[in-house]
Image (cartoon, rainbow, N blue to C red; front, top):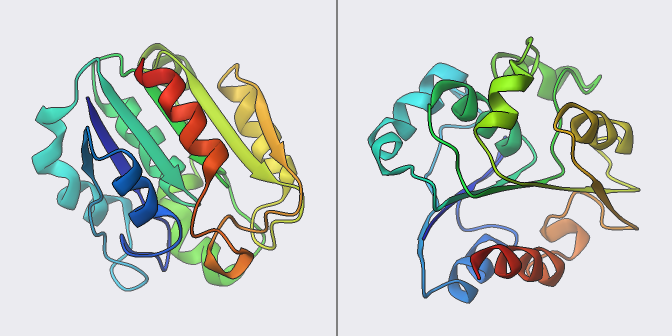
Length: 183
């Protein structure tokens, strides 16, 4: 089983709940690439970083993305021709957020017309987590993502942006859902 954890804008592999989750899933191969952000943050540059991993994707692959991470994963799902096991989107979104600072560096990833049919065909199950009080990603963005993916939305009260600022150095509910897919 291969699991990829994809950080978001201004993020890195050593923040939030990523190290904790990697340790909790140590029986499996967990890969957390480091992407350029905010400087040189474009979909093209992130795809270049991810290129060596594309041939490792198979039917037992699980993607976990935070913030901009889900939009990047959606772009991967559009590109590949294999059905992965599951995707876990935390504080995910598509389109603009109405925040110029983020919209400017996120636009190549998220502000586009997605091929939702191909994306749905390339993943067996989607889990979408959004917070009721996220300061960056409105809950409506999670609802929209859930509709486009024909998935349910797991609304978490008062979780902020599921980051360290909101107290998220661990994310037990996410781990439980991932473990349910690894059986």
